[in-house]
Length: 533
Image (cartoon, rainbow, N blue to C red; front, side, top):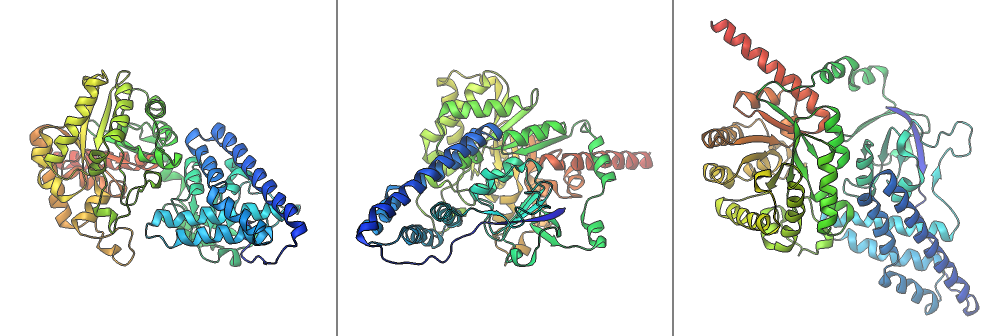
């Protein structure tokens, strides 16, 4: 919660077109070239700044933006419009970038559709430079303007330009009318740990500088000018948080693990004394860099992750590409239904070079410490064996330490769950990916609001399947954990413990809550035994 700080990005939606006299063409062309050069230099400076403050992977976003802005097809289209068609510079820029923006908006892939916002931002940056106008705070220049310090910034969209210009260390949150969770700027916001909510239509019309606002980044809800009664209801109270934080050790035989996607996430896990990382999503590193990373880069990153949680085990999930996690730079053929397509284990087996590069980087890490490698979206025992054979061969050829590597599989599809006993014979541990398992078990798209009510973690059929997995793991004497949203829901820990799942992997901030429920479960069990005797 905090006061609103409005930020106007000036989108230049209406640009006039007119013909330029022949004598003025060199001047128009020079204006464009100077603007292009200046914006490119800004991106390079931003990349250098973000590298020092956040990380090299996040800085790649700015360099990618620079490359798109300087793309030969776009630049030549603008130059030709100016020199051949005698179009004024502003309209030539507006028309060229708008054309590409519309093409991205028309794409079926939701990730690529959101890239249209990046094209729009580049257009705005160039036009602002040409017209010598800059995005700014609405109250900038007035005595009370805080430039976002201890404020919730409200804007039309969260742009990379905003991220580069502002000091976000003091910003409480971000609310935007447009943009999505996979936009480049949103990725940086998450890396910085800033709560952000997008898609709040027309909020720039209703919010004023200084208005009180609450945003819930987990649920995507924004409250503008809430009453004191609503504030008291919505905001978490200090006492329960302190009580949660006081439980720093998991009960004997139980584990409170962390889900993580960055070094920052792992450091947060360390701050709450997590028992380890139960799921590290390696694909996010590639997504941030927007390119394929080589073995040395991966090894350096995985080493940072492991060093951030010394003495604890880290479970690295191999690249889980496809569905809601496309990597555009891989140029994978567009699929009608990516959730049922070339993803997870299928992708890894179909790209042995990518698989080998990632495993070799992890094998190098295994020479220094114990790690776990997790196979995503495995369908059956045959597919699992192909992955195990490939990975073990890489371990041998890369001169790894087999005794320092445990191999596990994610149970995310019903077919794997039904073959659990056979799968457990050849692995060291299992992890239940509850998000996808519920989706595939009930044939419900969890991102589709029309059928979201069918996404039910309380359904008895799901619990029957979880019981099957628990029995298979117990018979094989193998570890079994659960990750995903389900594991972090309030009240769910005790129910999962009651059927025999004693390892929960959740967001670091939920670990105190999970530990508290574990403690309650132990007390309840002790009370039941005492009454029985």
